[in-house]
Every structure is written in C-alpha cells, then in structure tokens.
Image (tube, rainbow, N blue to C red; front, side, top):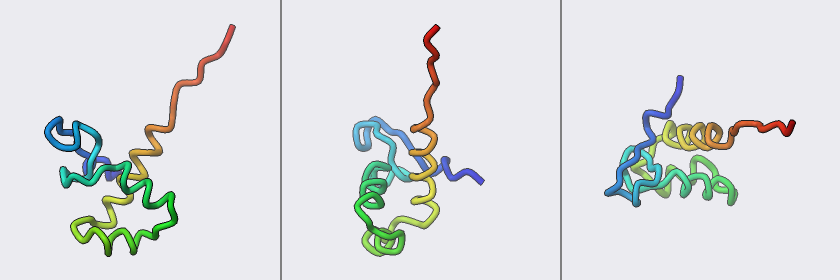
Length: 74
C-alpha cells in the first residue's frame, strides 16, 4: 500500500517543500540522513515524532520523482 498520503505540501511550512505529515521535517532531510548512512532505527530515535511509515513515504516519493519521460531524438 502506498504511503504517499503522509507527504504534505503547505506554502506556510518549509516554503511548500514536501514534508512528512506537516511536521516541518522535509522529505529531503530524511533522504539525506539515509544517504549519509543513518539507519531507520537511528532516524526514528533522533526524530521521535516520525514513524517507520514516514521513512517509507519519503523513499516512495523520491522513487516516483526520479522517474522521468524518456525523450527520443528523431
């Protein structure tokens, strides 16, 4: 099941950047923590307001954003 419903956009929160449930924790922040080697457990410990499904949502959002249209040159 998709967890994308956890990703929110609000112009009043983080200038409209994608956040987790409006908590002022940007999707980018979670992705950067994971990329730097932090484990899911470490992130959840450091950000107790987050849930495991929030990390899944951030990864799902990133995966969908990385897909793009393939242009073919004629």
